[in-house]
Length: 374
Image (tube, rainbow, N blue to C red):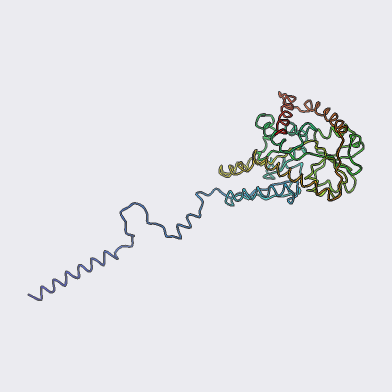
């Protein structure tokens, strides 16, 4: 009897031990805490998850063509902008700058951007005779456009106000639109102190009203892109030119220039433009980054950079032996009279259907007067 009792106790003990073992080891599933939430991820897995973006917006690589060297003030400005875009998109947008017309000649940038051969282009409207007539109101000589900040503010007011002006840019996504520093006379034959001094000069000029002005004053205008000017001056194919100060030093023209007349004539207009398909390929988040760094505020920043470079170039030219020429009040009045004839005739040269070009010009001049007083 005693032996049966002891055997029963031993059997109970074995059953309890076996039950505990099966409870602890019988399943590979983690113990549920009573919540529907999954168990916390291991520390390294959580860190890897935090490093991933909320969603993959893709990677984009764009080319940017400009006729200025990458070492110029404009090249450095747009490299800094490209770096900012790269950083703001966490490295997903890369813009590679091709300077000195290495990707597209200055007069071809517009077409190359439109057709997609170039993604982004730095376009100077004065190389495109007749394509940007309303934008080129800032190229009217001696009418108040001689300061890049002023002309940039005027351009954006006009761009926002006048649909025919916007239509001139419809083939591109406009990123920046701004004016360069005041264009000046330069000569190697002799100082340009009076209108008479222009007679007989072969002068590089951009297209537009300035060609009419120098022609009326007896010079022979030659439209030429900046990369070709140095050699043309060396060979005496041209003996004068119209250019802005920063451009002179960007292309080292101070080495082959004797005289520069310190009388701002007008501002050329620049656009930073983008191919529409490339623009539309960007997700809205990246388009926002582009627009926050361009448009009116970005244009004013580009204009200021240009203006600061022009101021610095004065000393560079003086150090190189270039003689700065100051005109008398009497001579300035003579230049102004010649410019007034060009200004009066300009509205009739602009063919925009059902548009009052003269009223537009007066509006632009009025805006220039307002901003120049600020």
